[in-house]
Length: 257
Image 1 (cartoon, one colour):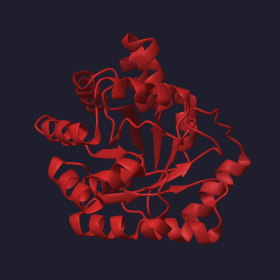
Image 2: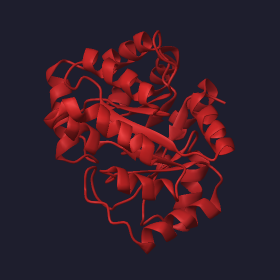
Image 3: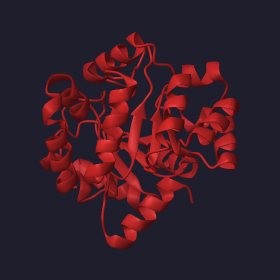
Image 4: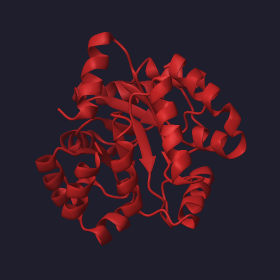
């Protein structure tokens, strides 16, 4: 098991759920990113999702788009984030998942990226614009190296799609709770609960909910039915608009989950 699998194994035995906060690397700079990751660990986050700045973040809403632009303006690249993670490993063992788009991986080279990511201490990878049908080589390289490949499901996913994603995913499955971009409004209703229940009946892999969770109440309701809760835009927005309140906000999320 890599660090992600160990986290879920421990949480399952304790009857607890995972809190997975997201931040964009380099927003506002890499030193601040380091401080925030260590803050997340201190307040009890289980896994950190680290965004890689990219010029065309098609799955992301305006909040994370602006964060990506700020990271790019500081010259933050995939290579620099790999180096950053390697240095970060001197201070923390918290599992780190990269969230990036396929273009930077393609340019870097899939096999080379997987090798360098594992050497840098990266535990998992989310590539929202790479479906499992097109990810055969990346999955093969990742399996061999011990890097978790995390794929996405949505409310519109068919039974066949659920089976494919469950087979291709390691670490956990990312459930996109809305048919939209990050930061969109979350609609918690019976159909959402039924969709998550249907997926969990088809796989025993951890299922974590993201996209749209914006406050402790929503996080608590999602934790009641999922194995983990991912919070991204709401955290990035706090960092952008009222950074002094970030610690209290993520602490409240942790308690709710």
